[in-house]
Length: 250
Ligand SMILES: NC(=O)c1ccc[n+]([C@@H]2O[C@H](COP(=O)([O-])OP(=O)(O)OC[C@H]3O[C@@H](n4cnc5c(N)ncnc54)[C@H](OP(=O)(O)O)[C@@H]3O)[C@@H](O)[C@H]2O)c1
Image (tube, rainbow, N blue to C red; front, side, top):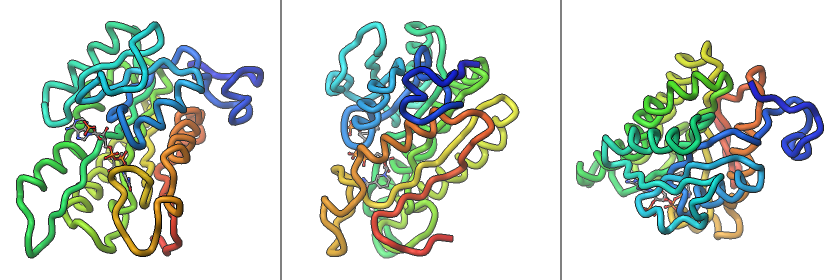
């Protein structure tokens, strides 16, 4: 287990007792834009080694170097998660964390909706994260302090409005989060759902209730992910719902 002793960069950011980022390898999906690009920047600053997955790795801000692998990952291809995990281990020899960030949102309601859109949301928002967990699992177990962060959504914790299909996929992703958290606990793997409301990215839902300045910024989500990754095994957080505008939550 890699733990800080109160003198290094991780402690400077979060205080004593946190896991040391140095040497740890994190896989991050959807690293080319939006929340994923912000998480990548934040984790580079923290000192992690990164395996960044994107459909077009050329679009990732980082280049391949000793501390970074930019790898093709398509959540709609069932073979892609294993290939990406294998490439990560081939380069770094280990996987310490997985951030399931890539996601899609499409209109899908009860009076309309193309089931192809529902299938796509279930593939990208649920099944690909499941497949990535499976692919990374032997290495997360070997780490002793493996971390999985699932970027879900408030839409997966309560249904207010918007796409019913997106909500269904994100409620399912919360189920994945709970199942993984329980099943993998004894292996030292800690699993957390980070569940934002509206975030200032291309995916932000339009509303008269907020502007791009009002909603949560991707850099703030990235700070929260960095904090979760650094938590020790005895301080696991199951889910972090994030409100940009007030609402009562269950
Ligand atoms: N923005 C919000 O208001 C909000 C709120 C709650 C939760 N979230 C969640 O936050 C996560 C990140 O979303 P975002 O706001 O950053 O959205 P975004 O700016 O639209 O970015 C979505 C990311 O997912 C990737 N992606 C989509 N389909 C993919 C596929 N088939 N294979 C691999 N990657 C794929 C995209 O890659 P390409 O560039 O190749 O399309 C992109 O990197 C998602 O899980 C989303 O559901 C967002």
